Image 1 (spheres, rainbow, N blue to C red):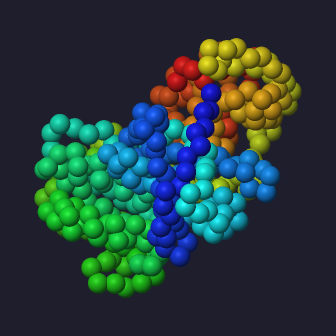
Image 2: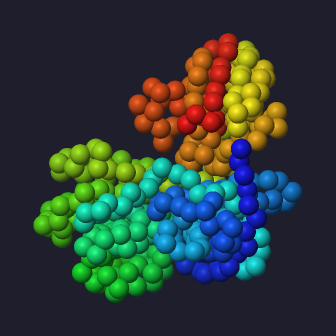
Length: 351
Ligand code: FES
């Protein structure tokens, strides 16, 4: 079941002309529910013009903090992000789902060197991961490569400089600007030359245990490929695509499928049965029956809506999250999945 909790906004800080950091106080009785791992996100449910919308936002605060802070960048035509940047006030209440997500940093008892490549608002979970790494062991180091158009558009700029100042020998940042020349920054985008400069020059003596990548798909694909070319193993690279979670405004892509399917859904130990059109997504069919299934982005990027197929088969329009082995296990993103068999059984509890 997708439980939401009403939490009050403690603080709103402007990060850039188009983004804000929104902090929520977590009351004592919800500290357990809202404990999180660095890299996770929360889902916010809100009504704008009478319509319920849900959005996922990555947490930038440290797991050690008693509050949750998210960065919200204004997306053109984005209903919630525009509202959050212009109309939210401290003290307002919002409905939040507990933190979730699989792009996480797992602290180690041994010292480790971690590197992250982030672009734009993809910095948000990386902020949390950086703090967790630096807090996790007195010898841990963190290298951040962070791409933006220019300094004024750089989210968390001041906080990053604060980290660099606090952890002088253990935190290094390399800003990359595509539209401005600044001292101590590289000009351009995060591309082969930047990645080679970091690996073969600036950090050539550092052996990194893990790389975290967060930003648009092309940056992640390129960075990941170049890291592998430089000898980094695939299982040392973690990534999260940071396409807009506002893509509900686009027409959804439907697979052209004919006919109906008998769908059986297990959720919170209850079994629900319904008949659905194959050209509808499983999630839409489930929500149409008022079954309280978990979901957030409805765009295949957040992972909130995962379920396991226990009988039958489903095909996904889009999948940027599940690995081949998870798909082989039967996991699906229900917001992207269409049944392709006459019967489909899914289990939200067994994931
Ligand atoms: S609701 Fe986000 S991936 Fe399905």
